[in-house]
Length: 278
Image 1 (cartoon, one colour):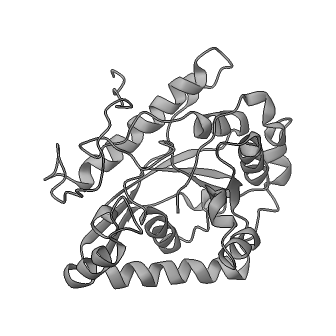
Image 2 (spheres, rainbow, N blue to C red):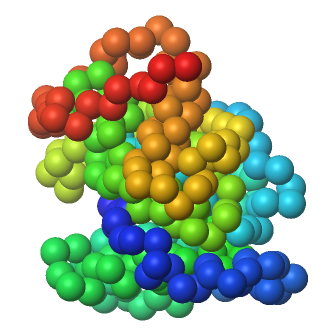
Image 3 (cartoon, rainbow, N blue to C red):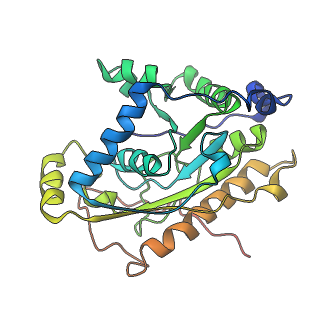
């Protein structure tokens, strides 16, 4: 599953204008039973293939939204890991996912029923995704987004320069952003999955790698909230900075390059993130 963060100007986020969050705060979105069951299934699957360690937390008053969770993206297995980690914290996020998944028989119907958000990449309909996300946030939902917009290709597997969709959504809706860093999912599924998937799963069953997930502190976007040119870009950089800071303690003995090397993973430094100066 690939999560997408589209980019769209703030004035299209009508669902978050005029205090919509305040109006719906008393009747938050409720996850349907099919999604609650999937949360438990994800936790069981991760537990079968790896040892999951979840640290940090989300303030109790934010767990049912409105909230934006911003996660780093290192493997096709990430969404399962993130859902399992959220389940341990009593969070049921709605996911922005590529349209191809919604066209899969049964899976697509289940995702629609669970309230996930379809992203039609490469079409004129792609812009609807951020509007749908804004509507979901206005309804009191938790939205899970990968700010990088793709599985990162940084050689060191550090977060790449992000797309601005997550920041635009947060700034327009006034929803808090919590960085969620994870490390270890790349040892379960290779970058080119389903190619090599069976081998990766077999290796994980034998070795049961440790997957660490940490919920960080909400990102302070206060200085970037003004409707000034470049505000979304500055907010995005703050989010990616926070993700990088949250990830660092999860890989203390792998500060430069990961120990586990996926030979099918390409390297791309064109979107390397330069941390802002303090």
